[in-house]
Image (cartoon, rainbow, N blue to C red; front, side, top):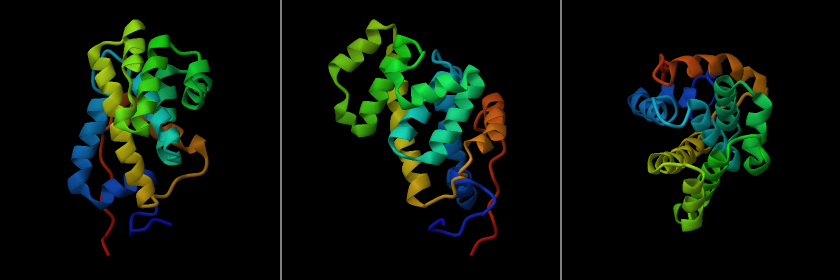
Length: 185
């Protein structure tokens, strides 16, 4: 049960965004810039970083929703699941493995990123912008995960329930209509 009165019909961060529309716009804009806007990393790769960090943070809602969006972009649910659980053995590029490793270090703490982590990413073709974005996505998802779990937002138990919304987000990004606030109490 959520710690605050939010819409029972909206899961996860969507209920929290509806509760505080004045913060919803900036948070959605940040998510859109990080995960959907044009970038040298594909939206699927960036969603995979978000799903992996969310998994490390034990945030089921964010893990399942961003894994579903990544699968829409990448067209391979099994590969996404593998990369979220164990990137080093997943059927993904060495560059993405290196970026996921950096993201995992950021999840532990920003100062956990080592020179050799960045060198590995560069060796596999990652640009400074891609390294920057992997760090920022990881840092932002630590915040998003704590926001969702810190307020005990409702998390659907069936990962299959994320697919319809995932298709919309994959197509249109995070600036599609934001949830409306419930009547307050």
